[in-house]
Image (cartoon, rainbow, N blue to C red; front, top):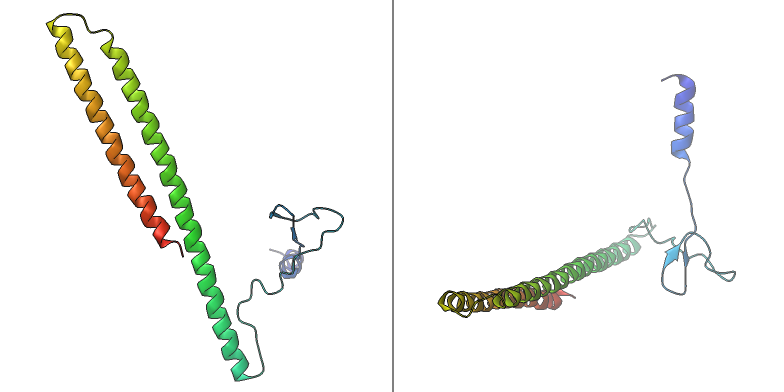
Length: 157
């Protein structure tokens, strides 16, 4: 790189970007004002957990509040992760129930084609057993998912 490029790079890297953030009535945050009365949110205490101070007692208080903030952030992140897992499990539960219902519907339709003879009766009995097995399998999966959801709900702090 030539000298001119290095100077331009240094200037651009040292430039700090500041942006204002607005909180709207619906709870969403955005870069543009929500309405004419919108005021920017004060984010001065975000980004730096530990502030410099003159006295040692003040720094220990700052460290304690920093530790509390870290715990609060950690708890928030854990709760969000758990909420996402619960939502995924509930989606899986719905998917299992839908697949079970579709499979049972297909088996019921197959039973209509059984003839009135011994082979048809045997086939019909086989389809009935398959319906029972499909229902039991889906019920087992659903109850397992329900237990996982309950366990995750207990973990939310």
